[in-house]
Image 1 (spheres, rainbow, N blue to C red):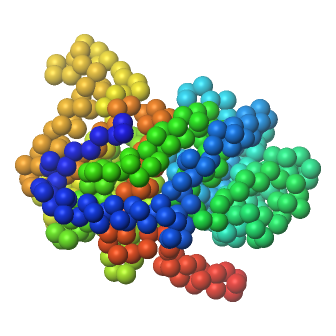
Image 2: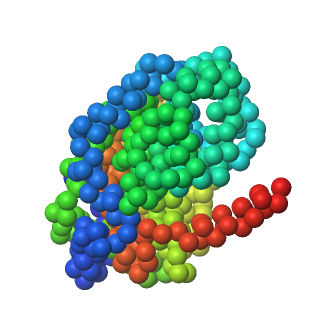
Image 3: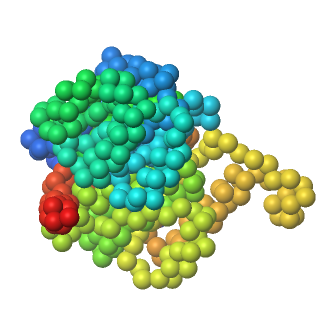
Length: 410
């Protein structure tokens, strides 16, 4: 793996070794297919180059006919794509990917409609069930705009749908109108779907090499890649929970990783937060949040441990001119950032805070593909070690039921 992990500051000692067999058994369960919704485990191998090329061709078509590609989806239907686009988007991309259908803000949608006025657009509607409230309510708004601008036939040509390949509102309408449909496999849940057309189509439309992403995921898509001590991160998370830590704080020193933190929050929160169990996943962006949360981290309630995710080589750097204050003049912003990373880790370790450190050599498509699959696997194993089903979300369904009741009363 290009990803490197250090546990020397986590305080776990030799405890990880005692659960490695259990972790391997959990990994075996993922690969046998005996658990529901484990299609993502083998998907990087099965979603071969020809399938990737099909998605890339659709993305090329999209970029050839629109200025804005509006992706409508919520949760796993957009977070992974936005995370990857934020981290890797090339500066010369001809089409801007926008996201909607993940909130109920009239102000946000109004601003978006004003932004796209006078421009050519395409939309991508992503909903596994084909009935997602946030997504389909926004779809109605953008579909009306497109019908008025392009007419029915051209609107269908500019509409791309990702949903389950079976009858539901979205699928049936897309078939009837002749929209392009990408199948979201029945055995892949939303939060594990970024390496499927759910994430790959928007990512490709942003000008990012999706074959590189899949190559990175394929590189660790095997039980052998997680042999030995490679599941110690999942084991460490459960060790921390058993030691009374109830919060994992993911920490980044690159602002372009902010939405990757949001993706991690959903992945872990929705997979593990059941039966009164689970680490609460939080995400902080440094150095910004050191000026708001730094005091709490250093001396507040010791209910958490930290996971530092560090990019070792910056994609861009900038010199600090000689006119700057003496300690900074002649350095680069990246060098100062590395000093902040080392200083924060040292200070927190000295304060007795358990810390996991992860190092990514460079943000490349291959590295990001590996990173996505790595966390999906570690999350699923961690949840199984805690004794919960990683792939259901009964609590989410409970709020949806209540919300629909109120909507029906309107």
